[in-house]
Length: 317
Figure 1 (cartoon, one colour):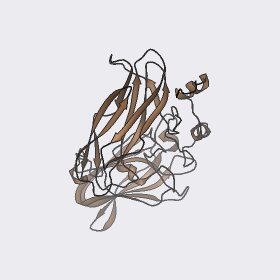
Figure 2 (figure 1 turned 90 degrees about the vertical axis):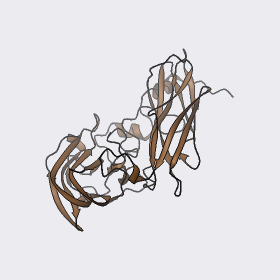
Figure 3 (figure 1 turned 60 degrees about the vertical axis):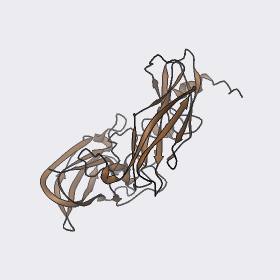
């Protein structure tokens, strides 16, 4: 069955105009819980979720080519279901004319992909991408699995390694994928506390599952606790707060906070940050042996005074 011809306005929307809830929020100066789409929103499809459409870099194969934002994916076992592993998948149009790009996604059982299909109008020379979440059901054995992407008669396979959190290559970041407890949590909103330890430092996924926004405007303190899985020497904590061109940290990011460590069952302040206007702050302190780290948020730069944290990283001496 042939698809109806898209009007010029629809094609323009695919290339970057805001539609739906994101359009309503675009004129606002605050990225609060009302925003539901990832920021910045660069396009939509008939499926609803935001797609990213951008000029592609052809490799000479021609036609519709499946592409992946990473050559492989690591999916840890036992993490909060609100923060599954994620990867950007899509397709590039190397033909000489616009097409309706359909990309079909399959995950090796028992893994589950959040969407079986990505579809969008795609001009010649452009590529689209969309975030796909990969769920690991309880009881899944550690091992090698995969994602299959099919588009334009071609197939791309992306290896997926399912590993225990303790076996992750964390690059020294003791907080990566560890359990997180927050002082408050929005219901039915994309601000999960577990996202502050998912390894994604970027702010462009704000309100799309990457970053925590507390649920108690103008009420302080707000806290985020990261369980380190046992007593470990720690001497540094990096905090990433919301910071994009549209939502700069100087206007909406976290301003004042204490870094605390749980030592022998008691919380103690090991570093303090005041007057911050940047997107990332590194706090170094004398090493302590702690089984958890807390961010005790005291004030933000935003008019509505929410706490907005993208990522927390913890390192040893």
